[in-house]
Image (cartoon, rainbow, N blue to C red; front, side):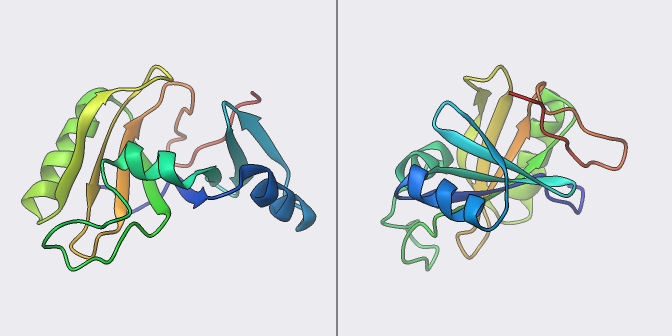
Length: 146
């Protein structure tokens, strides 16, 4: 697994309120399907409904049994990779390293392929191949104009 991030997704209770807050800070976002994307250097910060983010990661606010977590933290880290095969390889590597795969890789609504795991402390990672977010040679992403 490469040592880099592509997206940080914040699970929010009220999307319009959260977007307005970041825009008051001077950030400019694009909303697509009840999800707000902000370009943040070579990665993206994403706002998405907290309950949808937890469900997408295959966990609940009750936490992960036997992982010592007290609930979903409302945050997901993501690494975009270059192929569907790389998604499967990274999930297998994470599992072998002690991660819990909470959502096996599957096709996504946006035409990609992704799966999720949690580290031993319950932090959610999504590994995704997204043809709409091509990667530069150094692994950075640039959001398209939606």
